Image 1 (spheres, rainbow, N blue to C red):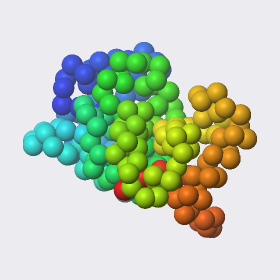
Image 2 (image 1 turned 90 degrees about the vertical axis):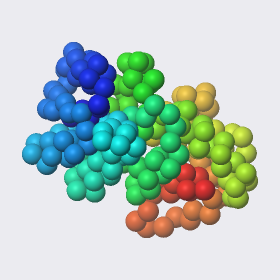
Image 3 (image 1 turned 30 degrees about the horizontal axis):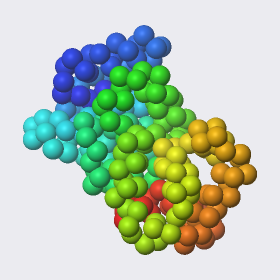
Image 4 (image 1 turned 90 degrees about the horizontal axis):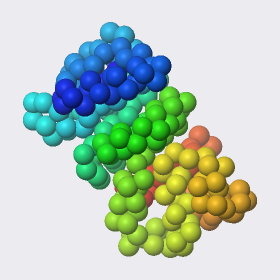
Length: 211
C-alpha cells in the first residue's frame, strides 16, 4: 500500500511496483486513509511519506507508528525529503524489524529501493545511508560513542542499515571474523552485555539514535 500526497510520485511508485511484480492494494493521499486501508485489507508492506495533509508535518509518521503498533507483521517503509532525526528516533525507538527510513532521492535508484522493500518484507531493516551518516556524525561527541574507533563506527553504520555480518564484510571488504570482532568491541564499548530477550544489534543502533 502507498501513501503519498504527490499524485505524480504516488502513481509513479505504483507503476514501478506493478512492473516489478508487486500488487498494490491501495494508493492513497493521506495517513488516515492509509490506516483505514490497512485495517480493511492487511498488506505485506506499506510505503508512506512522512509529511502529508492536512498540516504536512508528521501525519505520515503517526500513521506509520500506529500501523507498527496495531499490526506488527506489516512492514513499514517511511520516505522523507530530508533527514529528520527526531522522526527517525520515533520510528526506530521500539525495534528495527520490518521497518525502513529512506530519503525520497533513493527511490530514483530503483535497484536499491526494491532491495530495501525486500529486506523489510523479510523481517529486516533498511535505513538510508545518509540518515545513518548524519546521525552518527551528530553523536560522535557523546559518550560512550566517542570511544568507538573509526572502523567500529563504520561497522556500526552498516549495521544500522540492516545489513548482516556477511553483507557488512562484503560492503567494507573485510573478513567476516574482522566484522564480528569489531561488532563485539562496539557492544562492549556501548555497555551492551549479553542479556536474554534482547538483541545487542538492535540496542547498539538505538543507543546512538537516542544520544
